[in-house]
Length: 491
View 1: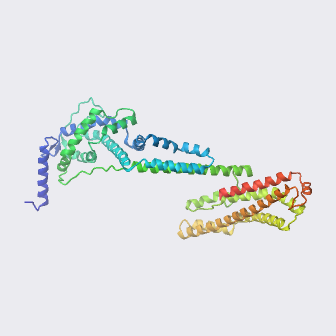
View 2: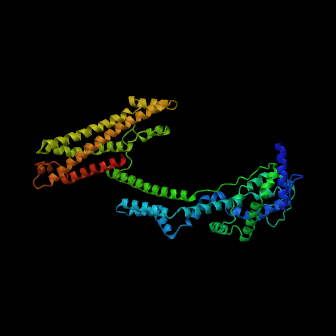
View 3: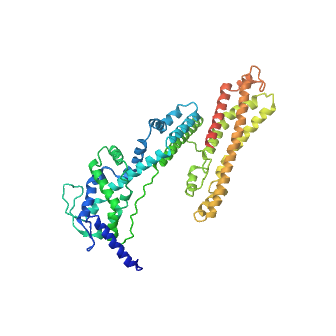
């Protein structure tokens, strides 16, 4: 007959647990005094002797990432290892730099990743993940604080001195209840049928020394099987805590290191490619700027600038987004349009005899549109000054945005409006420069004809300039072409 009184039922269960523990013939516990006996300390001391030396040889926190790499890379096939070498940053950069067609290399890299991934079928992934999880479990067993526990039984116990003969004493069981619970988070998770020698050999290789002696590990496995089979530690905690319903809460070891490894490899490969392209992109911009302006640092605008963008960045706003392009455009219009290009166009329009007014008129109109655009850019930049209407509005919204979300939205819309204005000027400039370049190309073709058809007095025009006309046209055309490339790269 079961008792309806919970306390009586609890006492009955505890009495039964005590009987079951006594049947195991291990004298760990004195139920009358609620104390634990020296024999329990000697039990833990067996673990301590074998595993404590390894604590200083292999540190859990420092080895996690390295251990993952070691386990995965030692499982690679020879073909996989060769493919992985091809996916290194150094290899990818070398292949891209020497390639006539980089798209071919991109496709090769994608195929390499695909083939590398295919080698990891579900069974192989499971084996590798299991090996890593067992290695982490072993590290947890190694790094359990045996010394802290044992010192409660012998306060004079020196750490890592195994020549010392311990003098363990009977102590209050409550002092060690939590320690045993912590130990029971590890022990149930250990599968004693696993090939632990393989894992220990790997750790030995990792550190270059023997971290756990083979004979000592066999003894640990024997003690572990005994704990798991008899559940003596579980019963011990139940009696110490007077909780017959206590059950250990084993740690869960289910890390997916292969999935993370493959994902990281793919990401690193993509980053390498993107970084290479970005560097090439930046390098090309630098080369073009150096060719056109003699320097890579071009600043012609005062207010539409990176300095102004600092305030917008703090509010996570995009800020001014066409700074580089607009500075380059302003510099080009000042350095070339109003100098070399003006000189040559004046020469053609004033001294040239055109067979078609349509072409000469288009050349003149395009040139003057670009001149007007130069002034428009200056006015645009000036309008952003704090003393001007648009600049005042920006400043006011910036101040309000610190406490008013509505102001942030208004600021975002205003920035878009300003950037659209800049984008529009860049688009018009590109369109006009293309027309200007095509017209200049037509004049060059005409100049080189035995019988010119567009301008009929080239010989006379040559007398009005000290420059070689062909070289003059080619130089201007090349600068316009390269500047359009620069705009394209910085848009």
